[in-house]
Picture 1 (cartoon, rainbow, N blue to C red):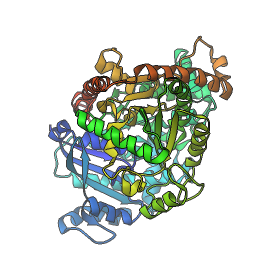
Picture 2: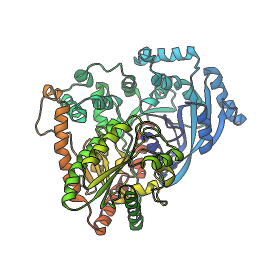
Picture 3: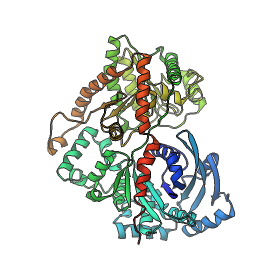
Picture 4: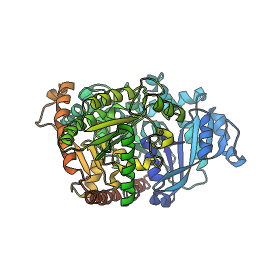
Length: 581
């Protein structure tokens, strides 16, 4: 095999979230490197400064903005700039993952001044052939951003790959990549294959986050509706006004769909009956599979204990962590529910714990701001509302944490609202030797009780280091766990089941499930989760060593190498024989 793969994503220049993590895992896997000749990361050029970002991590080979580049590349790309009236920046960047670094091509498109005739014609053809009504989303900047780069991006890719034999795979990572894939689909070039890489189902995420009953109501409604042959529109009404829904619903036209979890498949089936006959393949995400030695584990744990002592005066018996984005889907309130029960259990056993939340809704605070907040009011133990400290969703996390700390006696929580986990990023009270890897290697319990989690890589990152990983029963990673473990239970995984109801209920009864009942269910189930955590916590170095061994065995079977070799590449291989007319 010597394929060319075009990854269309908003994380083309740098990792910003889950898709960037997936790209790092895939592109650096040995199996991927062996099978793929060229990888081109395609995305929007959001500002001219992104050219500078690209030059910092790689090389700029062509830029219609600065004029950088060589004559050969300019001959390839300048016609696209001229004909479409766009800016293009093309080059390479280094992608790091799986303990190695590889080079990938990057193509960025600025279509702010796109030729209006080309824009109108593309929208017309999307409507004529696929029924996509772009005029409904004319005021949605996010929709227009990805729609307008599509034709110029595709034309540039075709020119870059002109001398390369096929097949060329266009992978649309989430709704952002769909317009480019739709353009390739309409073009019908026999060398190209199109895939929707479904990292989630935006419509279902939107439903769950906005609903007072969250995952408990929506997933039970979905299960019941599917058993009755009903779709999302039948249960929740017409959702076509939501532009992400409209784009995702078009992906059944593509050659294949890669779904990162079992629930994503089910959600697509619920989304639109057309997906019932789509070629949907499970391509799970991978997890880090690092063979952790005892010295690294114990040394990292001691650093976290030292940091806790410096901050709150406790050398904890148990270290809890949650590395996450400050969004409602991560359900951080459930962490405090579980910790409330554990606080009582710990007090009875004369145990102590510290809970570190690492989450930022602001970006990277400057070292000067961190030192100032630390000196003025004891950040990150103390906080103040407003920049450079608490902003946006961080405020709700802080209020929940403050209330928990006010009542707790054995466990204290600390909110580190900062990107980075070292002294420069987090202040003078952090041990000088500390790095982000110590947070993952040293934790005892990592929370991930999301109300919506298509896979959940972050919650499993400490698996190899022997941590207990607390994940929601609706986390997509559990399907992968069941597959590789043959149904056997892992002591390292604590499954928090907030969704399964005690009795079967009809559709009308499920519609009535609201905030009060969800609150009662979460209170009951959080005690069950806390009891599981308490039962499985290691009480000796021998217990911890056993958890490291078992966690690594499981993670190794779920590594990016295994995902790439057993799922991703075979999924593409099945598309090679598709005929194009």
